[in-house]
Length: 350
Image (cartoon, rainbow, N blue to C red; front, side, top):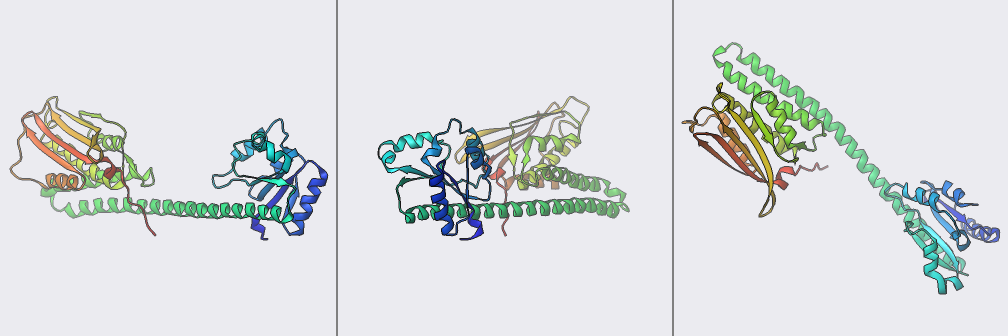
């Protein structure tokens, strides 16, 4: 036997039974102890426990609550093995009654008939301890997964910090490079604002360890810097980091264009409705996203597509299908994409 097999605890109210079983197990070098009561038995529970061996006399309990609480409080990987020893006579006519006496919440149970050979009892104990060892193998795997997950979280946070510093550095480089060229102030402003949109989304993703971003919060955060007439409405949806960053840029561009040329470009009571919903599609649920402007000056399709327009089309083209219209009453963008694709994150690999 090895130490990791754990301790076999014998709970047999009759002293003769207890001594006989303990003597047999210790003779085979099992780490063995005895319990004098149910409370004493529960006191042995924990990672050092290998198996519990109980005689039928121990089943006469008025209250199993202490045992049930201990069993319920086990870690998810653990299931204490129980071996019940019952007389052959009782087994022949009352096996079901024996199971009814023992709490059904305890699932890892083996019932053996007495009298039995020493070989049969030792074999059952070895089987129980082997199962317990496999539980600890599972625990080891889970601990390793948690250790790696924690390491991944630390690396992600360190990378996030460096990315944020890089964005700030790029903004500074743009500002210093453009400073001698005041005629390019508009270009500088556009570039810096795009970096800022990425930085805000980066902060949102940072709060979830770059696992996901809630779309409504993403929309509100991206539009918050504009403080204009936006009506935002839609259900809670979680996006992958990739989709979140892409949509942040798109929404920023849409808002910028609306303020410069669209519904929010004048003192009129222009408004932008930003709405989304989930609808069934041929391959699963789909996101329907709608950006609808109204109340502004008449609009028309631009004679030349600028970088912002190309960015919107190219970005959304990789996520789904989009349709842009320049109706006289206001600009509109409608997007449809598979929800599963928008929510799917890239799984890190070793």
